[in-house]
Length: 266
Ligand SMILES: Cc1cc2nc3c(=O)[nH]c(=O)nc-3n(C[C@H](O)[C@H](O)[C@H](O)COP(=O)(O)OP(=O)(O)OC[C@H]3O[C@@H](n4cnc5c(N)ncnc54)[C@H](O)[C@@H]3O)c2cc1C
Ligand code: FES
Image (tube, rainbow, N blue to C red; front, side, top):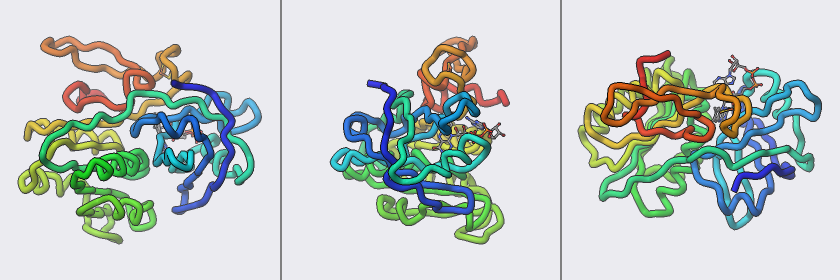
C-alpha cells in the first residue's frame, strides 16, 4: 500500500554526466513494490519546488530492504536531489501506479529503453530472469556518455545491443532500427518499453503490426501523483469503439498496453 515515509539515503552516486543512482533504506516498502511503479519524491526541504517529482523504481532488493532510483538532472528538483548525501533522509510517497504485468508464454522478452527511460527496465529484467525467461535488451542513447548502467543490464540480458545516435558506442542509429529483425527472428512473449514518446510510438507500432503484446511506460508531468489534480491525463482508446477516454498516468498508468494509447497525439 502506498505511504509517505522518510527513507535513509545509503548512496547517491553519479553514474553519468548528468545521471545519479540513489539507494535508500525502505525495508517494508521494498517487499511490496512492483517493477514499473514509481515514487513521488520531495526534492528539497524548502517549498521550492513545491511539487514532488515522479521517479521510477530502478531496482529493489526485498532481502536487504533497499530501493534504487536512477535519475537524470533536468531542473531544480532533480538538481536538489543530486545534492543529497548518504545519511540524510528523503521524503518519498509511494509506491504509486500500476507497474508492468508480465505476459506468460514460451518465448522471450524484449526490453527497449531510450535515454533515462531505461531506469524502470532494470527492475523488470531482474523479475524476468528470476522466472527463468530469456531477455533481449535494446538500449538507445544519444552518445557513449549517455549509456548508463550497461553492465547491470548485461547481468540479466541474454543478448544486449547498444545503439547510439552518433555511433560513439555500439551500433549507430536509433534503437528501433533493430526491432524488426528481433521481431522476425525471435519468439517473443512480450515487448516492454520506456523512453521518449517518439521511440515508444515506433516500438508500439512495430509490436502491434506483428501482433506481439507490448506494454509502454508513459511520462506526463505530474502534480499530485494520486489521481486528484488531472495534470497527468492522457487519452486512451475505448475498447471496441472509436471513442476515447481520459486516463491518469499516475493511477491508471504509467504502464499501458500499446494498443490502448492514442499515438498520433503529441
Ligand atoms: C511515472 C514517471 C516516472 C519517471 N521516472 C523517472 C526516472 O526514473 N528517472 C528520471 O530521471 N526521470 C523520471 N521521470 C521524469 C522526472 O519526473 C522529471 O525529469 C522530473 O520531474 C524533472 O523535475 P525537475 O524539477 O528536475 O525539472 P523541472 O524544472 O520540473 O523540468 C525540467 C525539464 O523537464 C521537463 N519535465 C518535467 N517533468 C517531466 C515529466 N514528468 N516528463 C517529461 N518531462 C518532464 C520539463 O518540461 C522541463 O523541460 C519520470 C516521470 C514520470 C511521469
Ligand atoms: S498527477 Fe494529479 S491526477 Fe495524476
